[in-house]
Amino acid sequence: MTESTDHIQHTWILNHPVADEIVIELWTDGESVRVEGGEHQSTDGGRKDVDRFLEKYTLRGYWVSADYEVNDPHEPELPDDRPDECAECGQPCEYVPDHYDGYRTGPAWMCTGCKWGQWSAGI
Image (tube, rainbow, N blue to C red; front, side, top):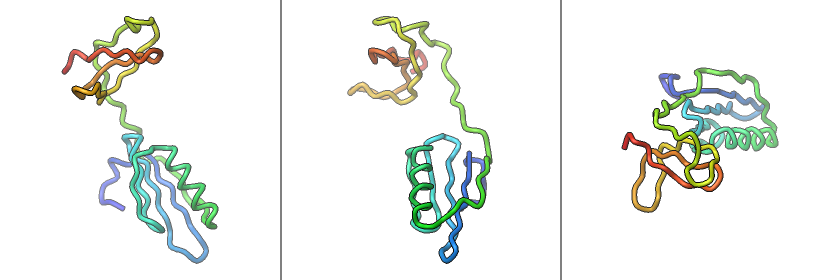
């Protein structure tokens, strides 16, 4: 697939009695998926896409001959300005590095309940 494996979190190798080998990679960003062999594809649906590809190829007669972790997933650093709770409803907040409010894009803390947002101080 590539010369370096620094960007790969997990790899699955699928074999078939009469078809070429297929390699599925989940990258360390947790979203990027690359399939080589069979139909060459790249997606950004994460583990859901991996499961979908595994099911698709299993139905076509493939089996997983190898399944192994390569690197730990990338954990983005969170800014220190996390609010204790949502100022509107009191629910916890989650970090969204690329929130778009219709006017600008940037890091924000979004409420898990009412979806009220507070821009991170780092922007």
